[in-house]
Length: 72
Image 1 (cartoon, rainbow, N blue to C red):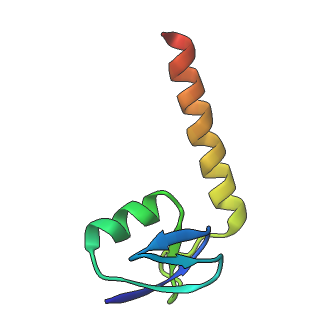
Image 2: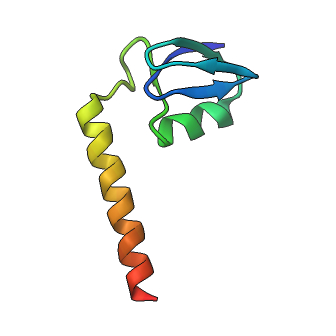
């Protein structure tokens, strides 16, 4: 079991977590998915990103999707 800090509001295991709440996640696939989507960060700081870098990544993802949609 690993402890993470939520970066965005989320629901896990039927429990609602607000931003900066501590959540224990057991499944590795869920951890990977949540990290990729910027929902959580490791409390020990290994995977923590600043809010600014997360917003930039999200903006880049949206831009990529918009570009793909325009090409169709």
